[in-house]
Amino acid sequence: MAQTIVQKTPENMVRMATGTYLDTGTVAAYNFDDLGFQPRYVKVINTTSNDEECWIEGMPNASAQKRLKAGGASTITSNGITVNSRGFTLGLDTDINVTSEQVYFVALG
Image 1: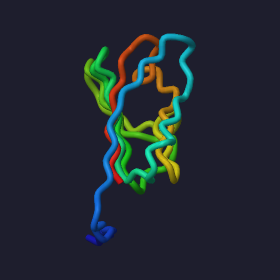
Image 2: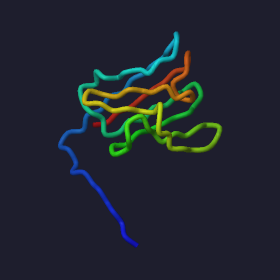
Image 3: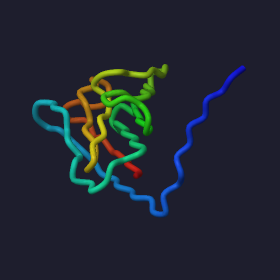
């Protein structure tokens, strides 16, 4: 059985950002693009529903691994997390980005 392993060299400095988001109007994709670094890992938790998603470097943009409190996990390929050189965008996933529901995030770079 063949295996392919890709590992990045650790950086000397880890950058971290945390924050919250609460949309009280019309839900839109939200840009957290002022973090000042390109994340290698992003985790987003909707604390109202207890649903969560995460994105790890190497995954396609707009994707995420999603876990629902009601049960089940899935890899989504749209409306997930899109990373850019200054932060990330939280997509329009209807379990995570919901009007009047509190969202927390942690991003590591």
